Image (cartoon, rainbow, N blue to C red):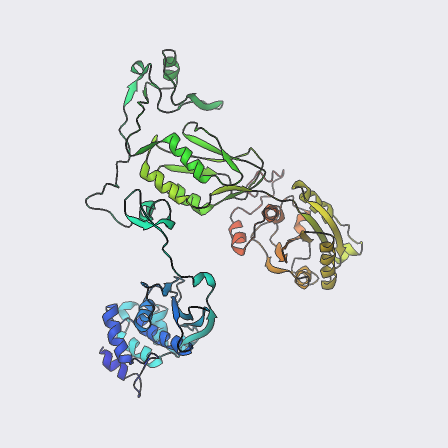
Length: 557
């Protein structure tokens, strides 16, 4: 359709955007800039105009687009904000919305598509929700409807952009990538992101970074190997009895060794000529580098590689913390591996935590750098100390308070706390009464409790008012419910800096519940989020075995 006619037909007046530009002029520029007159871009023009009209005059503002499609072009056409100058940020939330906000205060206007209002514009709605196949769309009618509707189906909200989303961009220092040689922001790690596995290209002809994947090694017959040194550990396996190195790297081969090597199926060996193939790293050296990069506080590792592997151990009692995302990134690199115990495992000093190694005997240096780059920054494996706390135990329940039911919770919780060296500073039994619960918590805190544990009163029964009592006592950041069975109706909160844990009644029956899985994290000082609880759902189903083996079971991991 003719954009001039489209603008003229949109109403009896001459449409003008807030910046003073005529709608017709914007449509012409939009087509030239975008390549064609996209419906989303036209909608974006109206959205930008609405946001500008609500901002105070004379301020400097930045922009956020919540989709990478069409909308950013409208912002770049109608405002000083562009992707290149950093004043426009794209946060791909998949929502068709934008915000213009004061650079200094972060206060601004967010404009989006209102799901209810758009129902009054069926042509736009069917296009927006992809209800009409593209081939069947009447583009001219759609554009005309967009021009007629203007901003009648938008939602407009005053917002304040969070500080982390309005921080200015800084490249920081620049380094030369040791793999490809090109300059890149040093903050990305030891090598550039492309050499770290994100390169979108196949190069023609192949560049030097596409090095040989395997070195040429010469196998030597046993008779000719006498007097030579082994290039690597030679492993002996006795089925169901033992596995270990028969000879270590550097072992001087003697006549007496030939029979033992032949017995394990070795007729040829690799010998050490004291020169590593150019561009490659021996498995032992690679393992040492990986172990050093993995190790964080509370973790130690063996000094020497055995069969190309280095093992990591707990250097103290505590809670094993694994940066799962960085471990996954490390293991995506060809030719390397890191295998560790489950995140949040309770460990003792000297316990094995896991191991790392190179898969091939000689690892390409570029792969070693990629693997180390995945571990750059804070160490991926550490053991956090679990600090014993003085706890206050609050048993709720009118039936227990009145003596109709014997209290069994106090002894149970005391025993579980004692396992981690915690002392019970005080215990109290209160009825199912909001004020009584509040007063009970206050009394425990006066006795020096630095951890509050409430029991029962967390189900859906009308008498269960523990949550309300906690709120009255000042509890904040409350998380109620977790994807763990048993223990779904658990509770986490804080009163000032004192953690609060609510233990559901099922703990009286089951040996292990959500409480047992969460308590070590609390003692390690970890703030638990809803996202953390959501991740627990995978592997948090107790099989109720006849003989409980917790924590040496799937539920314990």
